[in-house]
Image (cartoon, rainbow, N blue to C red; front, side):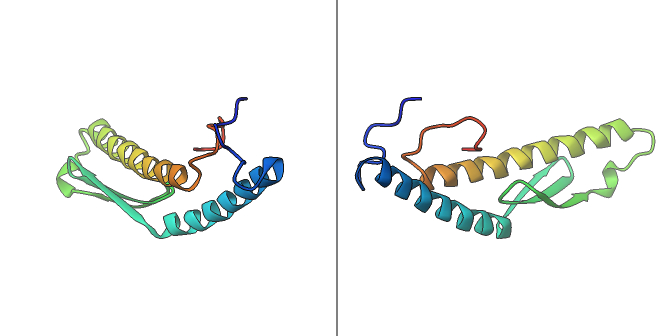
Length: 113
């Protein structure tokens, strides 16, 4: 894996790279706590979902007009769509914040940023 230009050079070589990584990890941990307290609300088609900044669903409200025993699949579709869109919005916010904290880290698959 090729490291970004200038990565780890601020503190001098491999030791500087490790210091940068440790600082970034500390900021990331604080960010996770901040994201847990944040709320992202998404409303679509009579359904409203609230997520925390990590993408965890906090609440779900469904307009009574959507509850039709003859059309359960329609309700399921509306709920799935709002949950999917809200999760995507919350995780996009999380990824943006991670990039702000760790702009010099290479993109490593599986780390969530």
